Length: 564
Image 1 (cartoon, rainbow, N blue to C red):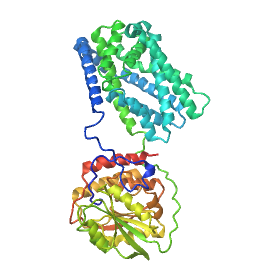
Image 2 (image 1 turned 135 degrees about the vertical axis):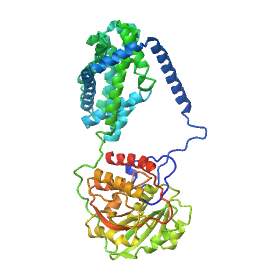
Image 3 (image 1 turned 30 degrees about the vertical axis):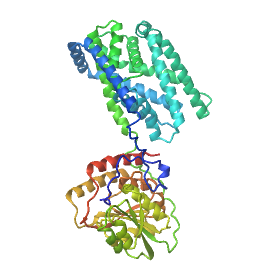
Image 4 (image 1 turned 180 degrees about the vertical axis):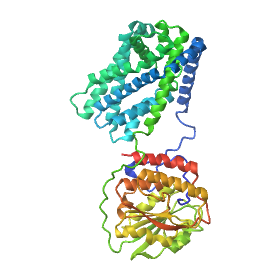
């Protein structure tokens, strides 16, 4: 297991990837003012407004709810699951069409990324208030692609405005009397505003991409067809519940309901969706009880779709593994014959062992002088003094930043010395300093760029059962992600070529093991393992706990695999 460092307090945010190579410390969030969060009052107001709207909607709905009608409609859906699946399939096709439109107006956006962003946004709109899922369209694309923010935002504004304008026009065409009864004179100005927003977004996008034209007619037609497909859900539910809706009326009900959801206060528009759909169906002549049953079941089906497909979109088409084909091996850095082998040892409160670790390291390795650097990560004991007395160069972090930050600092300090090889070694005497020549051998011969000392192909004096199981499980995960024959994914004894040490990036402060391996393999550096000896630590405690480890490491691994 890694060197026992305690995790830094508070949440660690990832600095911009381009700054990691020069950053010795950690990027911290600004401290919160003593008087509390400046946005706490607006948040309370929003929550209060949301609760008020929800309460009004619930009161309204309880007056029209008919238990027998709801049960009857639910049983009707269960009697025809195929029809329900076909309707949901048409609902899904609407989003495929929207994804296709987005790719047409935003070159460089793949269909898979477009589809995923739309469904992540759909998921967000069903679990967040105030239509906050809309922002996820942009953030999802920016996080998963190399596209610039401006065209992504411009294309999103264009398509969403066209989408809403299309649904409003559909409502006017399909059921003008219904729209007039429910919205009065407000819909026409709204359509005009949406058309202007669409044209403004298109003009902005045209300027950004230096294009001569935008396929607005095609986009608008696609939006209209998408809404017609989406109306299949309410049409099918109404049919099974015994309400006779024409396709045009189903489109009108969908349009009115979506218009009411433009600014949904509650998560998923719960309450307001049912109220709007029920009112539309009642205006078309349905009784309140069956109308509410149709509205509720339609919303339930759409929510189930969004949670299921949106959940899948959260992890696809993101990468869960390294590609099968990796870049070629980078050219090695020239190394002078007298270049040192540099060992760096991150330390946090290891006064009982760090001196012995330094003293047991040899004076030279394969004819190269050995230089030892200890990265003191804010120790509160005599670790720095013990390391200095043993002959190491001690570099102190400003305070306890975390093991990942200490490794990042150690790599940077080692590279400055023009090394023949760089070695990372834990400070807890679980690993044998005398095995350093095994680690550096493949590096110095040019056979490998990144060497990991494997405890499981070497000899283990003692390892606690739960630690052994955890190491095995995590190693299997690393082996699957990297497509390499990894036998020890968490070893605290590693060696790097000068090029690998210079290129290595550690994207979070808590730890380093998985993200460092993924980073170097993805850049084409050659990986190798050598068997080493291992003895369980006799003093001190590891900072690793399973819950915190997974909570910190899994998101960092996901970022590492999917960063541009």
